[in-house]
Length: 153
Image 1 (spheres, rainbow, N blue to C red):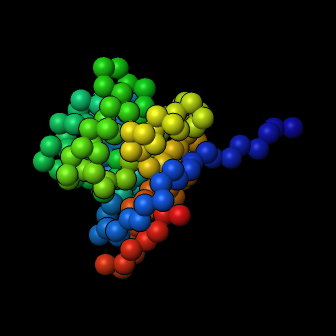
Image 2 (cartoon, rainbow, N blue to C red):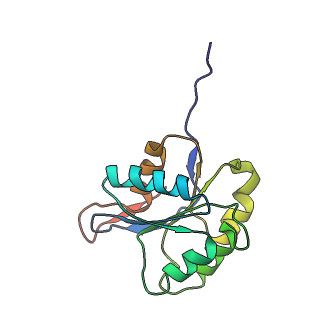
Image 3 (tube, rainbow, N blue to C red):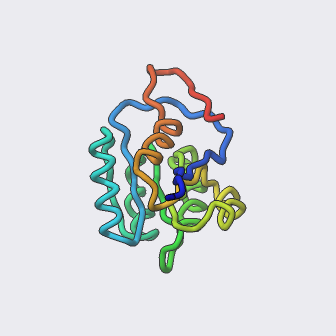
């Protein structure tokens, strides 16, 4: 009998998030081009406006003059990993409040301590249904009426 598989996604933050005007602009950061493109297609189907970049350095360049509503960030990338990207975002006045989701094949237990220290707000396991990730994005970048604050806890 097959074991039931539950999506793994958790909020790590207790911050409150301002609502955003739809469509939600999502920055997808991964060094796997096929995965990033597939995720972008799922986001488009879910009503989001995705931008994909390959690798951490590209994420830093892409956000020099643009601020996404949310960042979906791979952790294991060569030369500039997800922890480095998140720490850099947290030092930028424009990006300090942008929610960041660790999107990785590593277990939550393996990265939670370093992830929280780097300013990552949530975790979602790669390989799970994109619906779990879309639900998490809806919590971190809510599209409720303007001016209303939504609490993540």
